Image (cartoon, rainbow, N blue to C red; front, side, top):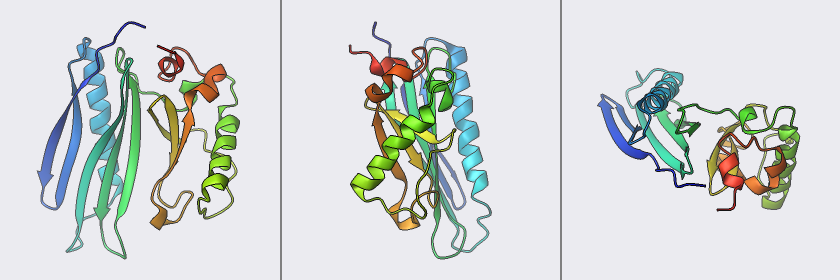
Length: 203
């Protein structure tokens, strides 16, 4: 595979009373339209996360947003947006939304789009998640059965990392429950043209 120039990620700092947000801005892509699509998607998702947190009217209310870049290579950009807010009660709440793009098109991918049509990716991934829950003795709020069809995920280190929001699978104190799955273990059902495709190529 020919070298594909990675995106340039520039942090943007946004502040309001009680609010501090660090948001990634993508630069340096050869296609301005794809770059614009990526940045617009990031902005919309960051705003959506902030909106889901509710009011900061509580005297000690606050909000902090930040991001982590998970993959920026082989024409794939995968990142996570985080938003923590305290709106009252015993503790604050952190939300996470991950976005995975092909940088040449700016298209954002859902979990089903990573795999060939008709593939039992839910069953294959769920089996590995269940095994990791047992091996790592992950505390669960109720017995795990299957991931959601649109389970949250990102791509990192040639792995698909599926994860669960706070309270979705584990108690709050456990934090986000992450389950890394080697892309090679799913190679036969990976859609070659999608973001997981380049991760199963030995180059």
